[in-house]
Amino acid sequence: MKKIAVFDAKKYDQKSFSQYEGKYQFTYFKDRLSSKTVKLAQGFDAVICFVNDELNDEVLTKLKQFNIHGVFLRCAGYNNVDLKSAYTNKIHVARVPAYSPYAVAEHAFALILSLNRHIHKAYIRSRDFNFNLESLTGFDLYNKTIGVVGTGKIGRVFIDIAKGFGMKVLCYDPYPAKDSGYDYTTLEEIYRQSEIISLHCPLTPENHHMINQKAIEQMKDGVMIINTSRGGLIDSKALLEGLKEKKIGAVGLDVYEEEANLFFHDNSAKIIDDDILALLISMPNVIVTSHQAFLTIEALDNIAETTINNLDEFFAGTFMHNELCYHCQQSDNPEQCYKLKTKRCF
Ligand code: NAI
Image (cartoon, rainbow, N blue to C red; front, side, top):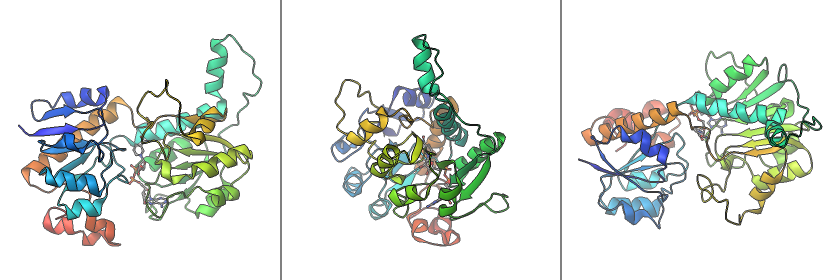
């Protein structure tokens, strides 16, 4: 039976993968995969990783030395993978492109509703039998403008929910969804017109820190910013300044650019060595959740099922539907995909 090392594994991962135990032999590691922990992968046939595992050149080169040629991401985003190095080291990388766009879109709205109606504050007050309503005023979502950056799978579910609230939806995407009827505009217009801005695009070298001081200056006073995509999309320092200057009215973050060593772990007994995060969390108009937007039963089951399919295809030597193709990333024309011609990226 093929031996698979599962990194950054939590109890809920073990539960969802346990139904496939007879097919593969899984070993679960609490540690993230990194230069320090890569030695744990020795002797395995493939590795399963998550969002904060470090799949850099050093780690991928080591995996190759261990004769491991398959990396399986149990997530959609792959900004943590050096695809060029994976290609050079002849390591196939597959991901789970979709597991539940509903989970993430619904969580983004959970943040919006909690921030707007101060649910996080009201919960604490009423637990103390304090039923005072001072400073709990929100605003109607109806008729407000919401800017959606990225109209892929999650963005589209998010737009449906926003429309259900009777909101005006403005969209930005370099690859607009054809025949969607969405109101596409520039990022500048989104910044200028939106009461709420929600990010649903991948993190790439081009859009790193897209929400920076210059972008924030263009936004409406009191804007609410929601990020359930990737932390690196926002310059956290500029975000903090915007909050301090009261330019930004509220912030909901499920991701944070320096989350790797903090999120998914209990740090409650530690002194947090990140002043920006500490200040953000201390603010009454900021809610930070720990990269949990994906965390629904349905999503976990779908992640396990697709990862198993990816493993099956890899070991069978057949076309890998969810392989991340290095050539496609380089090409402006996905029709020219190398993988389509050769079954695999290489
Ligand atoms: P998707 O691939 O279906 O859609 C992404 C959309 O973003 C595409 O329409 C694409 O054209 C667009 N896009 C690409 N570059 C852009 C740019 N610079 N500006 C604006 N739009 C751009 O991806 P999906 O499934 O909708 O996921 C979106 C992101 O959500 C992922 O990349 C991931 O980072 C994040 N995510 C977060 C999770 C969480 O638990 N917080 C879970 C799953 C995904």
